[in-house]
Image (tube, rainbow, N blue to C red; front, side, top):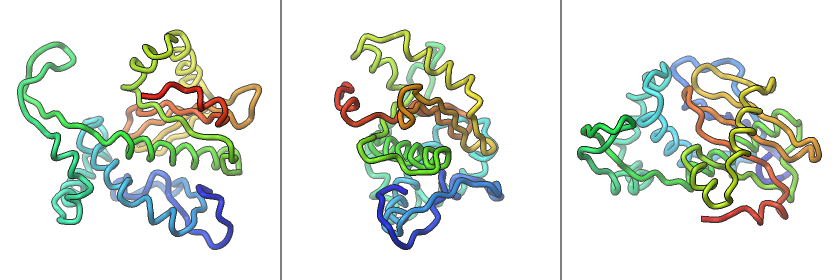
Length: 224
């Protein structure tokens, strides 16, 4: 489903089973993937789960269940290379919270490339689930983390479109949910069956706004 290879395939769970608690739902998303693709996702999956479980919605029941698992992962010797940049950027001090008060907290840098790669994989998988075929050649997934939206607005000078498309996704009947771990909704372009927008939530918090674009149009997307 990811690379287009024909032949023997395995089931890839999206998101991975390791993102769920002790009893995963019975209806997890499964898509066909060749063995090299499936095995190649391991380090990215571990990294993204670590970031989300340690930083995101503290009210998520499943997130709380996974904290001991993530702690064991972080303490393993083989995990040090995966988390090297995370620990290298970690600092503790008094910083402003959302209300402007200075509180003691930790700050770190997240590997955006790994997070984006995970979002791209999610969209390719749910596209396949909804459409019944893989994203065609000539189309790409453009992932945008919510924290990137103000930067993108400033780059392209467009402020009205984002509230519009997010409202469309929030109201879309095409919404699927797997407990408090994963949810998505999507809308489709009226002029192109393969041009779509997706809202991805993980651990009960919206994370990514993604689109599938014809590559010729995607090349015009601002970089930076």
